[in-house]
Length: 90
Image 1 (cartoon, rainbow, N blue to C red):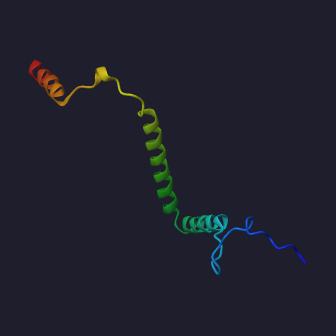
Image 2: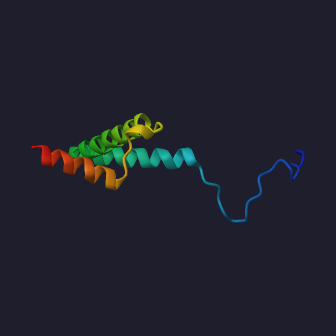
Image 3: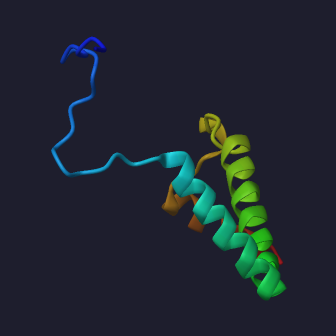
């Protein structure tokens, strides 16, 4: 007779509720995506455009997330004065 597993080593699940296999779920999602793209290639084009836009947005946020130069920042009133002086000089 096999030894009875101790309660500390067995995962606690509610009776009658099966466990979720994440790998199987992701495989099903991937299969559905591949079949949808093979049925209509435009879905693949839209996905590629969406992923490229996300990558560009992420790279821009990484590049521009550094500290701002306090010397180059102007208040709204200062900007209006600078732009107003530029218009009068023309």
